[in-house]
Image (tube, rainbow, N blue to C red; front, side, top):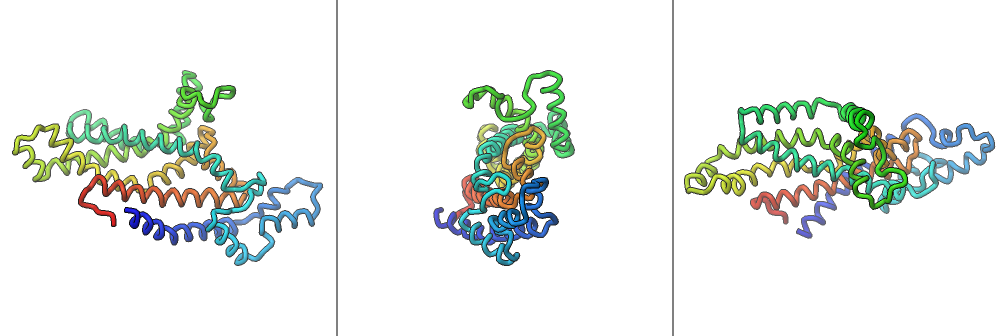
Length: 319
């Protein structure tokens, strides 16, 4: 297992280099000058002051020189100081990572806890009203834009009913360990982020469960006199879960990237909102730090997927 993990991490290096290169080119070749944007309206700065700022962030060098220095520093997870905040960019991003991970992991749990049982329930009750309801929900879950759904929840539960807060992670003045208050802030953005995944997993499980229960080995197990519950839980459900585990590959990075919209709607102070604000201000170090962190999480999620795949399907061996 250790050799497998090390080999997969080594395979990830070219992917991360490609992500770093594309991010560098997009940020540097996009129109606009971050230093001019940062100093706009500062009448007390001289041309020499502006050039000194440019030099401090390495923007006075040629593009190839900037790229070489950028790759060397990125290999050490050093992306420089934020142009806006004058602090280490990766540190600023990592400060907001717990909020984003809390949102993403909660959304993932909701996807699995709600989506998987719905798919199984629909398969067991094929053709009945429960099956039709789950399939209808699957279509709606894909069709509804996340930002619109989030705004509707805010209007209903925050503005009209006043049951849940509409923004932030904690009410001002509340203790940081107030779990109840944090859950109130978390429930709406997490559910909105999880909606598409719930629709996906319910469809996956319905299709796979229907396919598995038609297999010969299921009929053989039933013919041997095994209880229906045992046949379903031990033989059918475990094999039906294999495609779901496959679908988990990249889901962590997908949730974190999808959290960008949700964080904007609910003013959730996470990596997505922070990186988006940095992109608007052309804060190169923060942009690259945020994107590279997302790339590393993508690699990590695929690694977890492969290991989980081997656990679910004993025929798969990791070497």
